Length: 198
Image 1: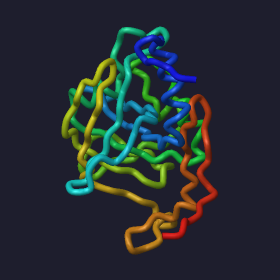
Image 2 (image 1 turned 90 degrees about the vertical axis):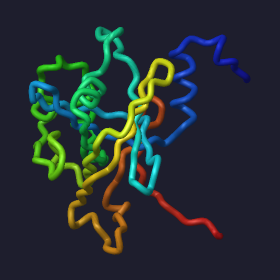
Image 3 (image 1 turned 45 degrees about the vertical axis):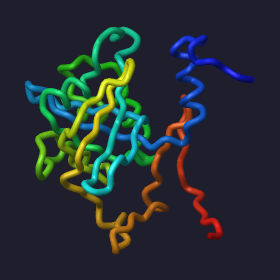
Image 4 (image 1 turned 180 degrees about the vertical axis):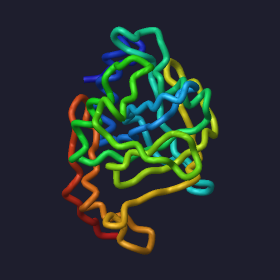
């Protein structure tokens, strides 16, 4: 089979991309609105883009369903406040993450809706998720509109890791972390790891 993206509907291309670029890590983004409402939402278009200075990126698409034609609260909040926190999603937190992905009104605090504990960050206003073992505080570096989506690049200015997930020498215990990955419309627990000969 071969496909020309120009001959397909947006959702058809999206299915091909999200079923091929796998597994994708999930950035659980915490932001705060101008009115001080805490917002939480997961995004699987997420990766590291620079090591020096440390920068990460997420891509945010347009609103869908009943919110079609609108911008997602995460994008609105990052644009207006210039700060956000990336929390890492573990498999045991999958249900809470899924709850925070629902299309809730902008005035609803997703921490409360998902039954999660907000804790103060060190250098930014958005809260961190206490239950998440790794949290990265970020300052907005740049927003680039690419087609229908917005690429958000953030500079990591503070890093948190729970002690029992830290191996020392700046290494994360990936076996204990149990990171949750995105596979098209499904999820995958990353637990079987192996090395290859050099």
